[in-house]
Length: 420
Image (cartoon, rainbow, N blue to C red):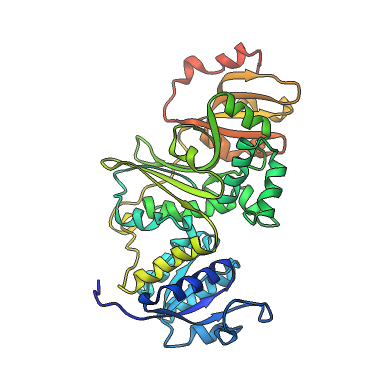
């Protein structure tokens, strides 16, 4: 690695919340020897807090400028973002990106481009905004010693769940409040249905375990079907509810990974992650458990992660992807069981035959719930548990690796008076 700092001349795509955050941060930190030469924008007439001469609508002005040695990409169009990033890398420019959807959709291609061009591609801001989780996974944890990584990676859903718990308001009212405060978009489906979280998880699975997958192969759901009654049940049982992204090394060496709502014990570090904050808990063989906490969204929080990547480029830093290229990458598996809580308004919506057994059954006037054990592959192959009127929440420590189903199978179903 070169010890001599080099001057960074930036061409930036996008000047929204994150772009303006980076612009402000660079103005306040002249010691970085980094400046934005040009920013490419879509709507030139819009009022912006920067000199007019900074902006252009022509992407080639940035991509073909030989003085610009770093492209910072902070736009929300994943197709356009990939075109910009791939062109920049081929043109010999380092790239810093905050676009989780683009990285998740084009992960395999981005790895190939980095190999071909030898140029760095850094994307800390695409995972957990202000939390430096990618750099830690890259530099600190060996994939054979990494036991698990659990995280709250979406601030919007976490804000909504916090309001449902702490203020006892409905999902819909909490969502409206999140939109009013700017924590959720006018179309909140990417957040509340889990797409944003699983995009981030695809990125982190690569840096944690060397796994390269698309979101089609990672089971996920959001919080769209969680009811206030679920929050009340959780509270009675001494739990919180979080949208948790998890990856765990199983006894067979393979990895269980998903993004699902989960009951979280009140003494679990993730229970302390409130409102729009993110949190990551990493467990490894000898370092035991480490907890990272910070803002998961916002102008300066995300801008600071972009700036950290820009700063690292002064010393020629790049991801080495040791888990992928220097170790045998881990492999995802569906061969395990999970303990789940499911609430519903109509028993006909529940595929009872999918369960190994049911442990608890509660019939209510408006809404009922059960807890039981189900094979993970059955969740992957079905959608009944995502339908309107059904809410699935993973139990705390919900992964069960091996069960002796011969003795227990269907026993509790029969005790509950349910016959398959």
